[in-house]
Image 1 (cartoon, rainbow, N blue to C red):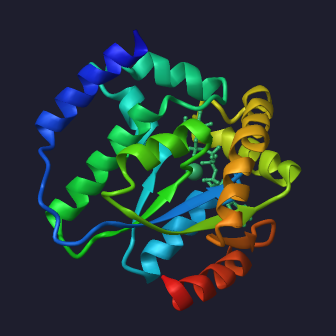
Image 2: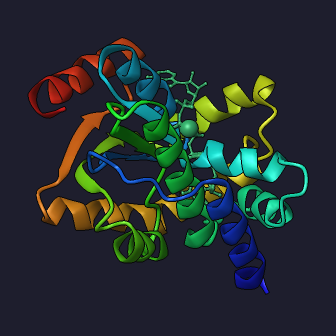
Length: 219
Ligand code: UP5
Ligand code: MG
């Protein structure tokens, strides 16, 4: 059922967003870390200093959830509230569409920060089978942050964010999913020598100093 619904979304999206012949192969940095580790905050700063486009998988899913007429909206809402990971074909569809739109507007914008993806084995397999030939993964930027610090930041943000998952119950599920499903993906990339790790428990500026050093070297 889910697959059928999302195949329809996929067909519609590809009609809206026809394949373009891309001059440059998109270059991707995956940005991973626990909920509240500062992925979004640091991505915004990277975009200010380097020629990257920030695509948050979570933001794209929240937009799709809120889009009138979305066949996947309710499914996405349920997954997010429960801290579960949305089936990969939905997420990749949204990411690829956003990448293509960015490059259609400006062909020089082929560097992407993909924030909060891949989060589990299903995500990784989905990426490898559909995107491996379309995009190059340069490295994984990993924000290493203690779970309690992460929870504290999200609870603080939850006072005004309006996010349905910034509450203690959802956060405990998000952290569990992160530890069980996402950390192993980081470890897998570590074995390939592709992880650039930053201690994310410090202040925004201190974290960004380390991030800058990484992008100055290989961004
Ligand atoms: N803050 C940030 N840095 C700070 C610092 N150094 N010191 C002090 N405070 C700091 O930051 C969080 C809060 O902390 C903010 O208030 C910030 O000011 C402060 P933020 O930069 O937003 O952290 P981030 O890591 O982006 O946290 P976020 O909550 O967005 O991470 P999640 O990974 O949990 O959320 P995401 O939006 O990526 O995903 C949400 C859900 O979508 C998932 O749980 C899942 O259900 C679903 N999802 C999928 O299913 N698949 C995907 O591929 C992606 C998402
Ligand atoms: Mg975020």
